[in-house]
Length: 288
Image 1: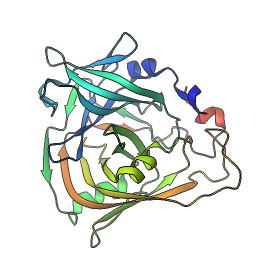
Image 2 (image 1 turned 180 degrees about the horizontal axis):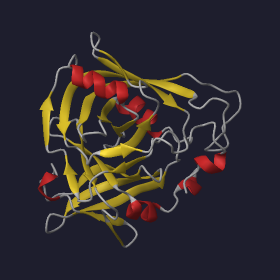
Image 3 (image 1 turned 45 degrees about the vertical axis):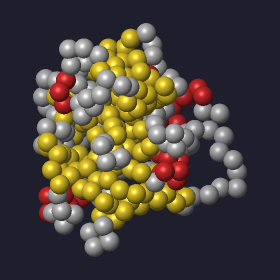
Image 4 (image 1 turned 30 degrees about the vertical axis):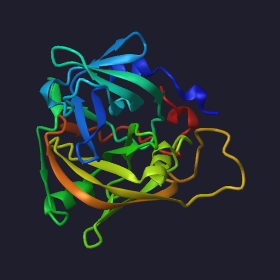
């Protein structure tokens, strides 16, 4: 029903100033690698693959194809496309992401920001364990409007997606070691929620745009639907009276927390940019 959402994925990848990759870790979890810098960060080859200059920052060293979830994002233009598939080491520090699944997403809930540096950056530079009651972690989560979610499908395919909202939408209960957030009404795919219900595995990256550092929280998640309707949903996008209508609730039992240093280039929030939410006309919500 949403097949027409595939969209110009190659075009979105070429204008992306962030390439967010969700990669499997040696302990069976998921972690993030991010390429940031002026577009284009990738080369689109043959319509089915993109070339990425990840260099030694890539955590994958195997010559065998590795399943990864990719997200090509331009936060300033509010463009994003999912590119999931297999990552293959090529040559000269480049990797090829062979797309098995690719589609664009809507423009909602993205806080526009612009990169402050002009060079290519591959992060994180380091990943260090951090306590959940660390004041810096609490501050990053309290201010975060931009985060990324990694999940995995029943067949082992990672997926990376954007999660945005007003400051404070990410809530951490330190005593219970639980992170929770509202899942706002999106574009009708519910892919991340479906993955979490199927496998429970997820990792969330919340970014401090001022410094480019981030908080990476991993664990087991649960998704609960809160909004129900007696009518079938026929359209991917809908206009609502409220800007952030809640579709469901996501809760993670946090097992690992990391401070990821310089995961991306620092960015500056575009304060006067028009907010695109579920209150916006459907044409404004749709990929452009």
